[in-house]
Length: 185
Image 1 (cartoon, rainbow, N blue to C red):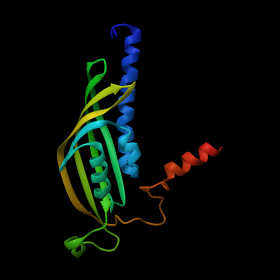
Image 2: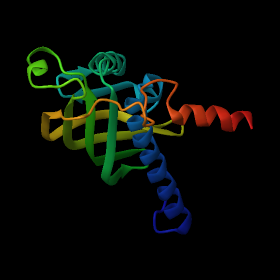
Image 3: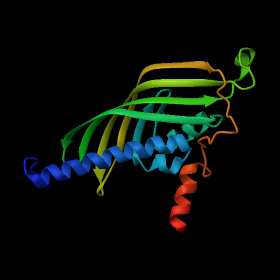
Image 4: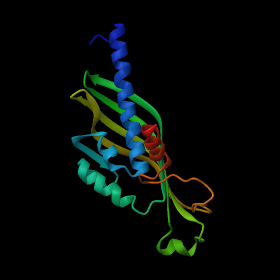
């Protein structure tokens, strides 16, 4: 493919869009607790270095599912994303992220938390990914999480207020309700 030709430029733009779409699916999957969606962003033989977890996709999903089991809500915000193609079917991708989640206090945290408080874990970092296109689909073949900062703090008043519509980590989230309603229409 000649990138200088208009067709080559359009093809690379499409490749970039596919890679970014995969990153967005990953964030949505983790935030909604949709592990099949997370799995869809990795090749089956992918390797992930994700903090204390290092290994394949099946183990990563188990690790994430356990890690997020008590989480009330989760938000991943993706920022700068630099995609460097190193061949027609391989790219080095660096994506900045902010991850924030709330959970009930446990152990000694109960001494400082009131009934309407939660604990907030926030992390800032980068995904350093190798994406490969196989069978026409761009997915992660190797991911390393580079943590820039991480903290846990008391979120005063962080418990869910029943008057608000809150994100959910299951099939009853507004997103999935809306998808179902649109499919019926």
